Image: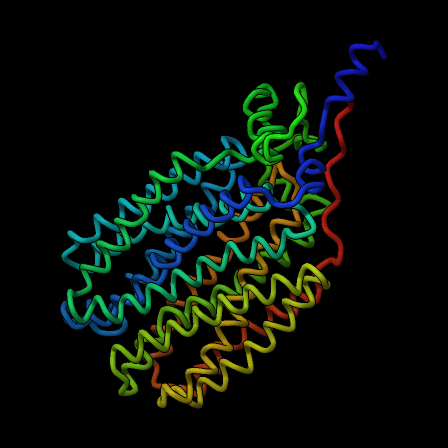
Length: 452
């Protein structure tokens, strides 16, 4: 090797090692905050259909069953957005996909102000869902690639708690806004705030260093500038960043089911499917159940917001525990606890004051665990396929969320007692727990390093 080649090799720095060797900087904190705000607004928008459903039903004279397309359409959009935007983020970058996702659900939600029937509102909820489906997996991927490995699960779960906090804030806001100004005011808020955030993201959100080093190595100046921000301005001149991973020889989607990822991918998909079926059934139909049993609309919104507050609490606790323990076992235990809490809610639903603490625990174990399983997904895959892996797991999970919302309407109209209904709802949590206990203990090995 010539002296010049030796000098070049000495200046080359692996991006992940560079990030792992340093404390979290202001630049990395900014990325986490921006992703947190994105998923918080995402959380408000996800809960929007549930919050406006009682008012829409009363104003348009709908039955409970006729409300189902409003919930289902948003979930169809979320599923489509996850499956579409994940591969795009691996191909074109995390930043442009994040911007496109936020713009999509902001504009579509504002357009929902002009809907005059279920068909129009459902069509616009599909478009909003496409944006939502792309935003959260991209935020998970971007956060995972900007933080040190030793704190990755904790910081991903902290960031994702923005989703449940946004949903909780949306519930409190709905309890105050809808009685005073009507359900259209909630749509205006749900669509306007994302467009304000879009301007902030455009100005401040950087691209992933790991993505640039792997997919755009020719952008050396951009990598150096970003590295200098991460290092707090102390980076040596001439430093060149590389990603010690090989790009896959085939499409990232097909790689998800190739060795050594196949078993983890299939178990992850099953867990997302089961977990999101419970999460969305509870989040979508709990307000209607409470109002049907004689509770006020305000009590329904506030009780449902406890589910989201529990999700935030659970996400913070579970992420911290996962970083110091075997992550899949932590998640499996949490799913089993959720099963017990949901069954108890089925016995106490008619008394909101009694049901509230168990709604909180159920939210902590279902919404909080869903936050943790997103972090687990980000750890399973290398950079070249991470966005696809996280997004496709979420997209497959959306099938479960659609099933949960659809089954919720059927169960409510079936005449079953609520105790039996909630016991049925709890069953997927048991399956999710079994999948987590069967999850491989190791992370997928990194792709081989390219020759330098």
